[in-house]
Image 1 (tube, rainbow, N blue to C red):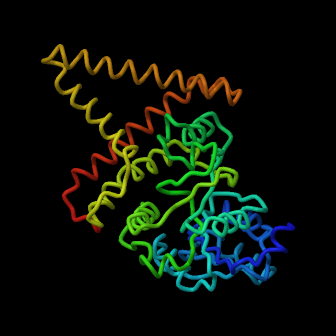
Image 2 (image 1 turned 180 degrees about the horizontal axis):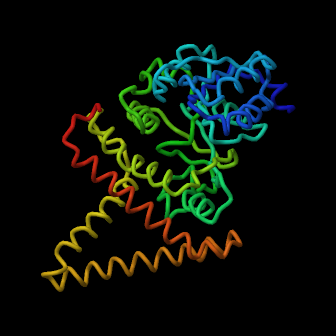
Length: 341
């Protein structure tokens, strides 16, 4: 707490897009409002998409007890519109964007802002996102572990972690200098998903820098229901390609291309195998290589987590993730509709 009281901290606006989050919003707001950032130097804007599940009542209850919290209406519950509404109403010199499906340690806000202040060349700072299951089931644990592993998440540094500070292409949430939005514009409201990715890519194209600080962490609660996870993964694969078409430039990275390449190779192999021995052998080799890698990673992660069931569950989740993500990407590539759906 000494660092907070001895430094002249900038006024901080915490912006949170939200819609129907009654399950999480109480714990979330408790963790945010319980942070050790100087109370007189911050505000919290919960930008709600007109929730009808009790979220707004919970938020009002917190707002009565803590004047820092303000409920902002977002008719239509579009996430980029909500982000922009919050930023437009924010009074802070620094804006941090948080996700309701996460809990934040008591020093999270302060350390993000300090990281921004101590690195004047950085325009956006974030930490490592630790994944936990929403429900403590074998499938839920496997999904959470997969989302934080190199085999499941590729080189997404804020998910898999890094040993030291690194300049990266994106971070979870993000702590921005407000001047960034005046310089390069707001979040693209045409994008249902991938608006953070597009904004950070635009930031980097303008010469801005994004810094990942591994000693800053938060806990994210990953989807534990397999059906919800499949739907979310399909959309996650769809939107980097769809959003790229919408904005007229590629906003993804190689990790977004690998799953669609994998799925395309499997589909092509399956189509050609009946009439080609070479295709059968190549497809078989791909399947064997993938299965072996998935099992090796699963065994290693199961041992690290001391959870033997992951040896069986993780290969299934890995395959589901990569195939469904790849199918989502393929759907976007083949979608004949204009990019600004």
